[in-house]
Length: 410
Image (cartoon, rainbow, N blue to C red; front, side, top):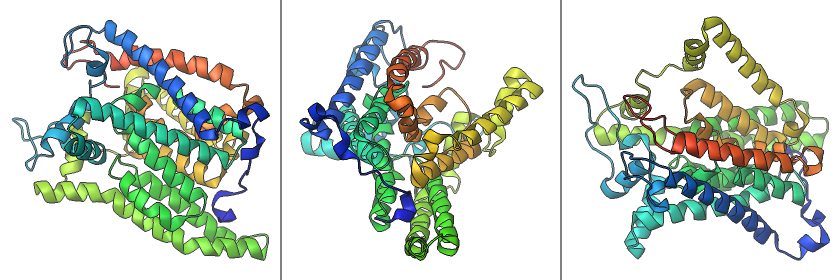
């Protein structure tokens, strides 16, 4: 284990209370996870009862139908049909919505299980999401335990399990599978197992577009190792950093290559070089323009002055976040990932109603939220998160005919 890659590691699994120590840590984590899924299920069932007519179902659909709304339908279409070899276009030749915007690992796993069991999408897709989320919770705990005591790590898992968008962990989306692979990649990276993390990163890049921010995070860690190798306080520190320089460089190359693999596959399969980007921008309705949407969207609502001030406030707030004590305690690996992911969102994400769901990969911040005041903040954070989860399901997952193009996506 390399101390230069992750900072001091808290070997704190023995700090649990005596009563809690009699229950294996995995059972404690799964109990928290299942409690979160029960709450999300109740929220979804309640919302389904009030759902009116939608493009996917009649009024008041059952739970199994309700969770297949929105992008779940695209994943099911991939499961049944695969990807088009010719991109669909409108009367003006512009690429329209199609399967290439969605990565293949989640529907592919469901497809393999269906071949083996014959249980079908309706059963297997939610089951894969829940199973992946459960496994992710276990790895998230082990990851948090590197930097915090047992109770704090459990509290961090609770923040993730009851988060405002936690209902997505049991819906047939790729979020759960991506969370599992991302948590595993960060854990291996924090433990200095640079070569073991490489195949995990490749798989992760076939679940959701995470290769670019992961490569940025690895680049930050690479530069940090180079700096310590030259400027370290002791020879042992400099030697440890030198051991990580080449593996981190190689890992960065693997992550960067994995990031472009899916767009390259789309190009080869369709014969169109911009197949993936053209499909992604079909949802935006405008060409890809790095960083600009974050200025344009607030300005359109608040005006150029107020919108600009809001953007400046968001940037300053994001920078200040990394100087707070709870976030600094997360160590270089987790802070590098959060910084890389925020930079990625700033460059390529178009701010919209789906932004809340897209923030799920920032799950390491859950540990920073859970640890202040000895973990007592959890008793405030979880109830607020549950209320926000109700609002997220009611306002975004529930479909309402709010405009000519329907509702805002979750």
